[in-house]
Every structure is written in structure tokens, then in C-alpha cells.
Length: 372
Length: 211
Image (tube, rainbow over all chains, first blue to last red):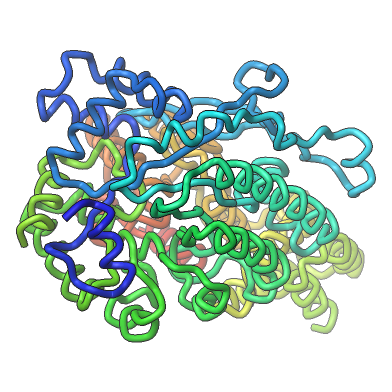
């Protein structure tokens, strides 16, 4: 079976020859994996640099690191999702700044770096009028969509991810994290205004991408938002319903109009809002962080198994980075049994694999998934 | 006392201006600073902590309550010094190297201040050496470390090892917390305590400081 056929079976709640699998990792981990499989003579740092090139360029002219990663995943039998992205072609940006004007800094954590936002373009604004007067929002025309079809052309046998939205994450960058949460109490008008702009931008970009793809692909839109922490929701169900769900609903409808499915990423303990998300029409739920409160696999499968496909669930807080190969194998079996009964499950790490994760654990994860 | 109840209620509502104003009023009425702190600010913050734990309020409410707590503490700080209120102890806190996620650490910091601790907040992305040097120089009893990321939480172990190497382990205690951190991990790396949430972190720090 092809990767796409395995995903298709999971989506239709049928069992395939085996559970479909997917891959999420930081560039640092991917570089280790490529080196371990002996696929490149480049150093880890060089491979990381390759993998950090924009997707729009790696998809068309794969760098050595990018090509080797895809070869590594094929060797491990991973049914990976292919992700498409338009090329940024807007006004020239300040050094280390993104299209929203937020400055980023690489923060070294020892085994690699994370890109963190360290200045916030809309910090300090007290009114919508003040923002409108002086802030220049990015426009969908700042991206070049002309290569989207070409990026997808060799990948009809894989699931393809194209567009989507995660506006509150951007909003936190724009305002600063604490201020963004406080705005939900003190500046609700600013939250509404910015979220409308961000949902609209994401929608315009997604539409332009989807319109350029030929029919017949297995497409997903990534409609995401992080609402949970370890034991519950960070923001109230009432706020989620007011600020997030209406915009997400529009993005779900856009996906439907283009025959795309909805891949919903939402970290942490989100059980309290899951009924709303299911009603919204999400198709795939990621990352299934089952160690978080109320996210027990048995319960999720019993309550939503007929309406949702689960994606992820290989625990990234404990099992993958700190567990043994045996722990990993056991978790693969548990996940297939608890989440994959009669299909409906794509096995993947929940969140990006981090470079402290033993490569052996990851190899064991895919080996076990391929021949349980 | 009615005024102190009002302070607690305004703090729960996240009304920083009102908490500042009521705290000044309490000071003017010659209520001892320690009593204003315990029966007003800390009493209010304790309710906030338990409502948050029960998912009846959410992160925005807790952040606003913390702001209000600061507003009250700013007023009280000089009184606490002039009344010679003994501190509960001294603690150095920060997020570990490579980790910029500090909302949890900030909440623990404000709760510790409320509990009468002198808190030296080193901010985020703090090198192991800096934790140890500061705690040694400042004669702190406890180092509190926070991490959101699995990759950075391993930095906690380096602080424990460094304390060991400097012969300070045991004299300076360690407490760790953050989403991926567990009691089991604390035991594994030899940290002295684990804080499940801000309220329990304060309880553990009290125990450590009393040892």
C-alpha cells in the first residue's frame, strides 16, 4: 500500500496493511537521523542549515539535507505528510524580523536552537484606532504562490498539507505572551480586530494555494491553535467560543470548498473543548498528548473515535526522549490497540522530536509500527 | 476584617488599581503590613490558585491577579522592611538555560513573595553557573528552576551537579517545576523538591527553607 492509501484507510476507519505513520522533528534531530542512517557526509550543522531553508525552496530544489531526510523517512517506511508553502516575495524585512515586524532570536538550549520571538510589534498599543493608524499588516500578495503545484507534483501518493491558520499564536508574538492573555480581559476589542485580520490573511493565503493544486490529491489544511496546558485549558471555553471558533469555522469551510480535510493541532489538556471542535468539523486531531489530564486514549477513542482520526500520541515529554527502546515499543503497541482499533489512527510523535531523543528510540518506533 | 476582605476580593477580580488603593488605605489605618499581606493579598491569591486548579478561572485571570498582587506588594514593601517583618527565607529563581517561557516562574515568584520570601528573580534563559553563583553570593537557601521544554529541563540536573561540585548541595536546596517536569524526574536528578503548581511550590519551598 502507498502512504496515501494507508492514510485513506485510517480516515475511512478501515484497517490497512499496518498503521500509517508520520514524522515531526526539529532540524537538529533530523540531522542526527540522516547521519545515523549514513545518508550524508555533511556535518550535523550543515544538515541543519539545509533543513532550515524555506520549504518553498526545499520542495522545488531539495538541499542535500532535505533530500536525505526524505530518503531516511522512506527507508524507515514513514508515510509522511508533504507540506507546501508559498515563497515570501514581499517588502524587504528588517534583519531577524518576520513579516509581522516581530524580531526573532535564536536561543541555544545546548543540543540545538529554538527561534524565539523577542520583540512584539503591537506591544504597547492601547486601541484599535492606534494600531490602524500606524501598523502595516502583511498582505496575501506578499507571497508568491506560483510554484505550489510544482511543489506537490511528485507527491500524489502522500498526504499533502496546504495552508491553514494559527492566529492566536501570531497574536501572542504581536503583543507579547502575557499581554495577549491579559487582552482577553482588558482589550477584547483589540483581540477581535487582530484575530479578524489574522484569520483573513491566513484564509487568503490558503485559498490562493488551494486554487493552484490539481484535483485528486489527499489534501489537509492545518487549522490549529494551542488552548491547553498540562492539566486544563489556558483560556476559558467562553473565550475560545468568542475569539477562536468562529474564525476557525470559516477556515474549515474554506477547506471543505476545496475538498481538503482539516488537520487540527491543539496541545495539552483540551478535553473540555473537544465537543466544540468536533462540532466545528475537524477531521484529524493532533497531537493527542495523552499524559495531559483528561486526554486518556481509551476515553478519546470511546467518545470521539467514530468522528475523529487521531494523529500523534507517541509521548514526547517522557517516552521518546527519556524512555528505553522497550518503552517505545510498548507505547506503539498500546497506541495501535487503544487508538487504532478499526483504523482512525496515524502514529507519530506528539510534537517535534527533540535532539535529546535517542535515534534508537525513533528507529524502534517506526520498526514496531511497520511490523508490530 | 472588612477592608482586608475587600483587598482579597479586588485581587481575585484582577483590579490592580483598586488593590493598590485599598492597600494604601489599610496602611493609613495602621493595620500591620504583615496582616494586610496575609489576610488581604495572600488570602486573595490563594483563592485564585484554587479556582485555577479547579478550572473555574483561566490564565488571563491569574495573570491579572498577579498584577494586582504586585500593586499591593509595592505599597507594602517599605512597611514590611520598617516593621522588621522577618523574611521566610531567600530563594533564587529563573527558567533554565535555553528556555524563555516564564509565565509559570513569574507566578511562583509572586506567590513566594506573598509568602514572605525574599525572591531573587534571574529571569529567563539562566545559565547553571549563574544560579549557583547567585545563590552562594546571596546566601540563599533555595534555588527554584522552571522549564517548559523537555530539551531544557536537563539543565536542571547541571545545577544540581554544579552545587555538588562546589560542595553547596544540601546547604542550598533545589526545587524544580514546569509542564514536562515530574516528581519522578526531580528524584532522578537529585533535586530536593518538585512543585506541581505555584501553590504547591510555595509549600515545598517553605519546607525546604525550614530544614
